Structure formats: C-alpha cells, structure tokens
Amino acid sequence: MKNNEKIYLELSKQFTDQEIVEGYVFPADLDELEKETIEAEFRALRLKALKESTEEQRLLSALMRMKLLIQDYLGRSDFEKEFSFAHQLEQYIKLIGRNQKDFASEIDLHPTKLSRLLNGRDNPNNELVYRLEKHCGNVIPAIYWWKLYAKQLEDAIKTDELVRSIEWGKVKNNLKFRA
Image 1: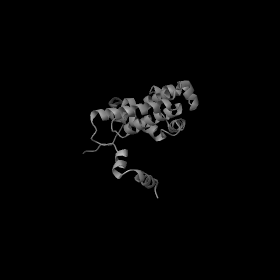
Image 2: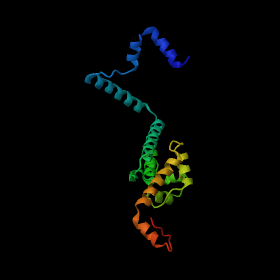
Image 3: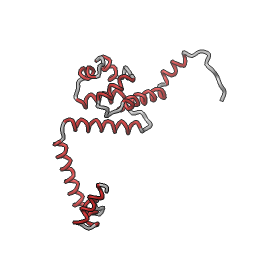
Image 4: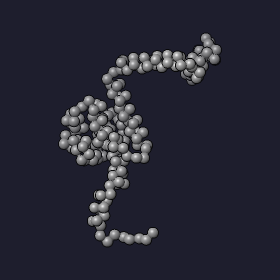
C-alpha cells in the first residue's frame, strides 16, 4: 500500500471526504479578508523559515536562483548583456562573498586572467567552466557557463559588421556564385 493511501485511510477514520478535501485544497471562493489573512500567515511562515535558515541554506538557495535565471535566459533567443559570461561570473563571486584574489586562488587561476575575464577582455575555456562547476558544488553545470559565453559569441558574430568587413577585406580569390 502506498504512503498516500495509508494517510487517506487514517484521515478517513476521523473525517469525511469533503472535510479531507477542504483541509488540503484551498477553496477558490475566498473573500478578500480571508485571502489577506492566508497571505499574511504565509508571509509570516516564510519569514520565520528565512530567519531560521543556515548560511549554507541561504547560499544554496541563491545559487539555485542563479541557476534557474541562467536556465531561463538560455531558453530565450536574444543575447542580453546582463547575462554575459563576465557579468554572471561577477555575480557569482559577489554571491559567494569572495574577493577576486581569493576566488582566483580557489579556482587556480591567475588574478590577472580573472580580471581580464570579468572585464570581457578574455574568454573562458573548457578547463575554466569545469572549475566553476566544481567550485559551485555542481549546482551550476559547466555547460551553462559555456552556453553563456557561446550565446554572447553568437551575438557578436551576427552583429559585428565592422570586424566582418575587416576580415572580408583579407580574403583573396573567394568563390563567387549566382543565386
């Protein structure tokens, strides 16, 4: 017998089916006062839970939030600067409460390289995204870090007409086709 069935059998000894349903399902026909009361009780419970949570629980919660925001962003088509690799790495470092020097040491990266990554003057490689995955306790997968950079690169390829023009000028004897 499943656990839910056991619970139902125990409850049915004391309550009718209607009472069981009303006890576990919020009725849709609440008046404004009842809604406000329920919302206030929920807020109070939520605040109590937040106050009683440990630093580790708060950090995990913040990392999960970051992961879900990245996941949502990766599902969209357009590049957004606030989700650039550099910006998200900066957000991660702030979230975990480290300074750049300590963080660079923790992931075995030269501080100058980290600074260049954060300023968008350097790009991540496979090794770095693996280190980031490990550092965050596997909460944010390496592929998410990589896809942040890939989406940024894709946008640059689509929109950087100046570099495209310069690079096209370097090509000699290109193939020509008629449409």
